Image (tube, rainbow, N blue to C red; front, side, top):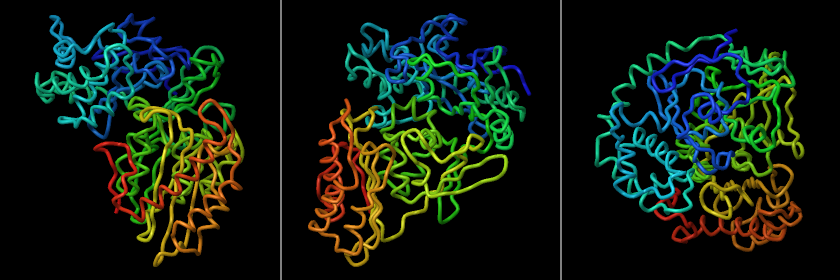
Amino acid sequence: MRDCVRFLLGDELKEIRNVDPTMTVLDWLRLSERKTGTKEGCAEGDCGACTVVVGRLDGDAIRYEAVNACIRFVATLDGCQVLTVEHLKTADGELHPVQQAMVDCHGSQCGFCTPGFVMSMFALYHNDPSPTPAGIDDALAGNLCRCTGYTPIAAASQRMYELADPASDRFAHARTAIAEGLKALRDDETLRVGEGNRVFYAPATLEAFATLLVENPEARIVSGATDVGLWVTKFQRVLDTVIYTGRVQGYRDITDTGDTLEIGAGATYTDIQAPISALYPDFGELIRRIGGLQVRNVGTIGGNIANGSPIGDSPPALIAIGATLVLRSASGRRSMPIEEFFIDYGKQDRRPDEFVEKVILPKPAPDARFRAYKITKRFDQDISAVCAAFSIRLDNGTVTEARIAFGGMAATPKRAPLAEQALTGRPWTEATVRDAMAALRSDFTPLTDWRASSGYRMTVAANLLMKMYVETTDPDADTRLVGDRRLVHA
């Protein structure tokens, strides 16, 4: 095993031993490196004030991604490059085009959130040479500014391309050299660092991962830390043994087998959005509304499933699609329909020595109609009150199969068997749908919490089924409030 975390801070190699397993990137930058341009705001991955850019190898090239430093553990940076706002200006003080654009467009007022915005814009600058206004909105949705408003910041996000071509940027010229440097840091060893009895493991292979779980059944598996990070920053929980999945080779692979799409559990929301959107446009739109871009860049589909949250956004869609979950351990693999994985609140069908290896999505049948809806208090970066997914198969106007799943309506993501029964074998008409809407009241007894009342959830759940009916029978119905991001279905 290797006992040293190795990564680049800018172009400087850092080697860290005996690091606390849950020390955040934010704390390390500010307290150890005195990089105080990176700010702490919410400490939960919502406000974006702590945004830094992480460069990681994507094949043989380097990809820049905006991430929240406040909930990412510093040991997860192994094999990566980290850029902060301090790295952007040149040695003689010349501002980077992203920074200069913010100055030109008066995009900063109090300034506290500005470094985070600048880093999100920097990642956009290097990933999208000509973003649409909607693309700019998506890139900035994970950053909150409470005093300027977004108009000048969005203007700066266009202005930066006018000041200089991203291809001529000094960071673009350095990409090949940085990628070679990161390749030199690659190895097949398991990383093991920590202090005392508190240990951070980062295996490089699936086999090593499985062995570590046998040896450490109490370990906390961490991928993006978009939930676990809050346990540390908000609940002050102490995690003794952490196993990080980000170095596991092949764990984020996405494979088109012809009939299915196999998605490695380590694939991030950013990884999966395009391939899933090509098959299920509504599912892709659902993914786009999971957190801000900083969260989607690190949060994984496997983590969302294994967490088992009743308001997790991907499980209802996966259940409605009829996805299969594959679990792995040192003794082998087992598969199950994904809805069977969720047993009760906080309880899933996974042994301590098992981990989620992949999820298999069947491709849509020609006679299938799929819709997914997320109901929240605001459009971007919010937690679901109700999440619904519907897959209806029709033969000459008759429902031959119905799969209906909800999040936020029960202690787990759950199907609606009575509503499905009310639809199956009957004509796809408003009368049939209203019978299914009534049956939903026997399928669920939702709770009341600060997100929504029980009555609101029940009403919304039923109305979403009617919304699907309207959308599939009246193509001209205007049911989507997403501007030029409106979906087009076959």
